[in-house]
Image (cartoon, rainbow over all chains, first blue to last red; front, side, top):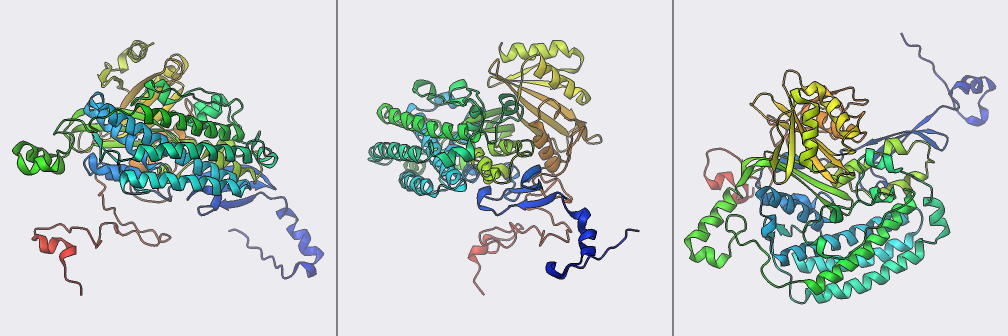
Length: 416
Length: 191
């Protein structure tokens, strides 16, 4: 039987020498500290069980799942178009990019990605890049705020507000966009929207330079981030990191260049990549990626072709309402699409898109019909966080906020 | 090297336990017939064929078909810029296969998720415990026999585990052979 020992500590001032002796063996013990799930630096509901030796972390165990909603289970129970609203809620900082990635995955399964009209592809690229700027602005602002530079956060949120206004004009919603449809888009660009977008790209360039001036050569910021959270090249690959976190570790790999989708092969942009793989490198990459996204947006505005935005196939895209009310064939198409969904072939596809956080992949295993038999979402934040228990030990307690900020994750996507 | 050639290399190395590569939408899938050798196959793919990045690992529940489980490995090579998919079947009686965490460390969390969601064990995994659901949760939610609405579980520490999401919600249609006025709670007269 275990021995029960009562230690009475009434007041430290009157603690007897005897009691201090008794407590000797308790001193120098490692301390377990719980960080999260609701902590401002964990950007949502990440929980870290830390073991500390003084201020040094000796063990870190990330606990996830607080935002688990069973998206993969839900996907098995609905048609392909019905799942689009759920993709908004994966990486909720860049819903447009998720919409596009998901639509492309299903179109790959259906074998229709080659039939997408040029205008649709360009608009989707605009969506992806707007989402990237928006996500990086938030990631950057929150990162800077976590390490003590509050001003940047206010600047970047100013710009994000403009993006949300653009997105609202485009999709009707600010956060839950649900903009794409399988085989196209829910609607074309509103009138005058590209002009507004052009105005925005000029304004955001100024804001990015402002943030750059506030941070890039800021002594405090550099001290907090340089040489902290170093991920070597091999570690980054072994742990399956993607996105800016992978490129920070000196790997020039971007799905937009390596496996171009949409019209990325017709656009001119550069892929920044780091040298050391520390928090500062990852910050610099996000900064440069925003500049490149602005470049892409500017090119898209000038190149944007006219024409339809949806595939001309009644079995994939809903027909026009006017036709449904007047023609038999369109009525049947409408009925079949709404009740059964797109009739997908038997087969399996994986499609990964370069999202702001990394490679967002959808693996769809279809047994035919309008519902996936199994859909796996390869969430970049989930994989990027798995390196934490390897990389945190040895760092100071206060480095955690810098490391978490530089990894830039979203729990909605991590937990699905 | 193309994905087709890489798939051929795996087949020639493991002649007896691989099936022919299937191509669909430009992606190649190689079936592995012996689940016990999956870590050797993966190790060969990484060391000899430079598949240094495990993109994803997931599981499929084949429901009433045998064998019940399929485990899918998506590999990518930063050298050849090629994807390749490995699929291996695991029977329901066995429900376990060797872990590939020693090949790619990223497999750690993927395998934990597969264990959590499907209940497949990975032999040799350093830390196999639930990841998305809480420790002690009695079910495997991605199995086909697990209902979408959820199941209640008797967990003293958890506030409630009733299948709440679909129960009595304002816009939820209740099943049953009634007419729409009864099925649709929206059309109920408020008390």
